Image 1 (cartoon, rainbow, N blue to C red):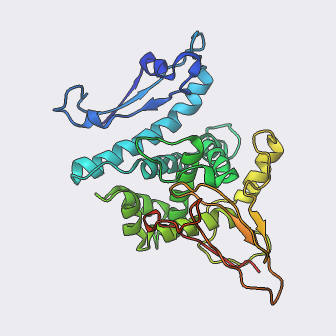
Image 2 (tube, helix red, strand yellow):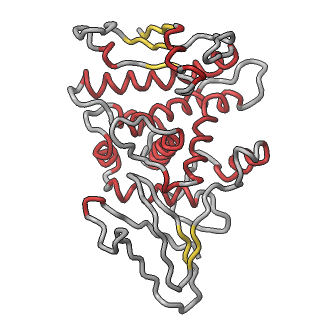
Amino acid sequence: MVIALLTPAVNRLSGAGCANGIVLGYFSGLDLAPGEPGSNGGEVFFSLVPDPASATCPVSKSLAVEQLPVTFMHELQHMISYNQHVLVRGGDPEATWLNEGLSHFAEELGGRRIPDAPGSAPGSRRNQFAFTNVDNAYGFLLDTDRWWLVMPGLSTGAPEERGAAWLFVRWLADHFAGTGDETTVTRRLVATSATGAVNVEQLTGRPFDELVGTWLLASHLDDTPGATLPPLLGYPSWEFRRTFESLRRQDPGRFPRAWPVVPLEADDRAFARRFTLRGGSGLFARVQQPPGGRHAHLRLTTPDGQPVAALAVPRAAIVRLR
């Protein structure tokens, strides 16, 4: 049994002027360890309450009603993950980046599986549960080399990094479910003691660095007009080009491009770019060569021209469009 506790104590976590963003709710794994000091000895979902008159961080009733079901779905995945990884199998909690990706996927799943409310517009439930993920993913794709997929340390991720994590789990669900449905993938990622990259490799049977490169290509090339691409280079569950174009028409200030990815352009002449790559991030470049043109050589070095350390596991993912 999951206890849902709505309390103004959660509202106070947002800070004065909503300095910490609006904290909608949370779950603590400590509550699943009854013998530990401070544990509530059960599954508890803590959530904010409507407080439109707050002098520090107002929360309208409409915001609470709209977001609490989404947040509950998100935190319920965290509860299940902690139970399966730690309590059932005696392992470590799931790596934060993958745990958050799975929870954002759970939000999307709610939007796909829960019917629209009576009298509401078709697709309103999906919009309620999935819009934030699409928004976050758009922000990630605008500037992919700026954000982490594999978040460092104790970070819980910027919105753009959560967008990356959702995209990655969504892509895995699209391509590695076998004969099952999309939840086949997420169930296998949760019902294990493996975590992070090892968990993903165990699921797919492929090296993590190879998967990340292929996923980044898919995130750029999904539904590319006029291109015939391998099935892995796309998201069959979404029409992102159509979705992003619609969002740009509705709110060009928030969604400035019909397609967020703008690759660097290069040809068969010398080309150099200095950049920082974060764990699981990437930079896109499109190289155009005439028939019979010179071979293109790719060289990745440190700022002082030395080879990149093998520990960084640098990888280039390349696909020919025409």
